[in-house]
Image (cartoon, rainbow, N blue to C red):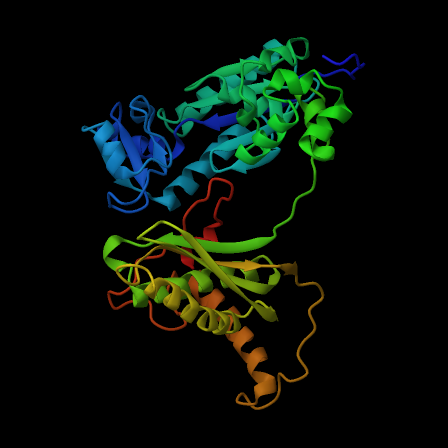
Length: 431
């Protein structure tokens, strides 16, 4: 370790990571699944992938991202159940409420991860351990006995997260300042959030092959290996210093959908893309943002290659303007897909609104009182209509009113889904 004097580093964070969350919720809801290998999949198809695997399934080498067909080969007794994202959000909210009975939730990191800051009267090791055990027991008792969790306690949130990963399932690990950074040396660089394959290669080129070698450098040298000031920051975090959080902001809003095998043709893909664009536009308005750039992206069935194209728009949050931009992009996807061997077959399609900015102090349009068919008034009227549809769907349920067709057997059901880093709001299950 570099010869530097560090500030006091008391235990400051408790990080709770729910074990096999989606699969555990299904085992709670379906008692027949308890103790059995289970995966949760987005659709009932062997061509999709597991989005969660139960503790029992993981013993067969099955994990998130394992293709369903491969998971079945690894475990012939495997049970596949379809995802119910609204129920996972309901359980998430119940878990947060139970945690709040013991300690305030400082940050919801994902649908299955929560961080809580410890106060001076609760951060002695024995006090923090007792608190963690009360939280774990409370979740099992009040929310569901299948909802086990692994808890990490450490001087900062990064280390608390690493500690929660050290013992699974149902673990409890404490990292104190006197153990740092030595206790981390058995971990891989890739175990640290923010270090992926590309960064791992960059560090290797600078002679850093493991956590020990990174920590043995002085902070500035660690930052140089990282390629910027983040390396300096990481050095201090690994030594237990609790640094202020770096501010973040939304940069994109979007949705994607894996199409069922029988609906990967041109028209069903187009209708699905429209539906995804409408969902993104609704979220954009609800969050008070507008966008300047629309990206259409896809993955083809034949070779799994990723494809994308984009178009700039006048800054907008209007569903009709966004659909108009999508209509200009889709022929490019149709052309690219039609050139593939076997013709147009899209496995996944997505729509993302980029270059978003908050709507601050929006001024009413000078053209709002013109005839509705006047080109100058049209944008104002369609934005008002978009907002009116938001209110109707929120009150009467998803698809109470929509732009264009949503039925007819040519389109997959596009429901709200959970990305682990973003929990949908209740409104989204009505979009």
